[in-house]
Length: 328
Image (cartoon, rainbow, N blue to C red):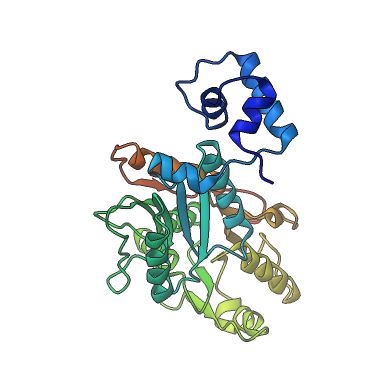
């Protein structure tokens, strides 16, 4: 038998309305701190659990938020989701998670599901381009976490392009002129765009300096780094993530090159492994829990009737031991 508010009222000798106000977090509740504590202790001892669906019906609000995007398989995304979950829970909201795997069709289907579930708000990691313009359900507050600026929407952008421009600035200031980008075949358009823009700003022709690595060949990185044109001329590498940067450091050592003496290396993410290698990796630090906290704050501002402006965060460059002056 489930325990009700009346059972808690009978146990404490207090009115059902007082019990309801305390356990439902009614800000207009005038019960003393001691009384509120006694009610919560009685509810816990009796095993009272609130009827979530009855509360939704009574308040005419679902107190549900949908979170969709490529959610799994990343240490960083887990930290971002943690910031969202803790902030939402503090406001009494529950979350629905949906993994879209960067598939536009699946993304649209998930948004329809969220609308049927009557969520009050949506946080959406999404692509934002001419062929993949997100279509948030009408009437549902939505904050996008896109790969590029999405005019006309509320969004939080991590500006990867600007971060890569700054990474090129750092290397150019150290005298490097032959700087290569290493990334896997799929993705990275914003990173490549920032890399190319940074090179051009310093008068460096990017032709031949962007190297894509096939994902199905374990020896592809060694082949690229060992090519005579690459091996003899490139003095710095900027990788698309920390793992690839560390793989590059290992491959360079096997080829007899030192880091950073012969070749400087920069990564992206600032994952925990960045400080576990020798030398410690210079890298661009992705915002971690802050992304989730800022995004959910923007969403709650929308739910409260405000119009928060778009937010752009640029990953800062964390300089460690894997970069140095260009070799003479």
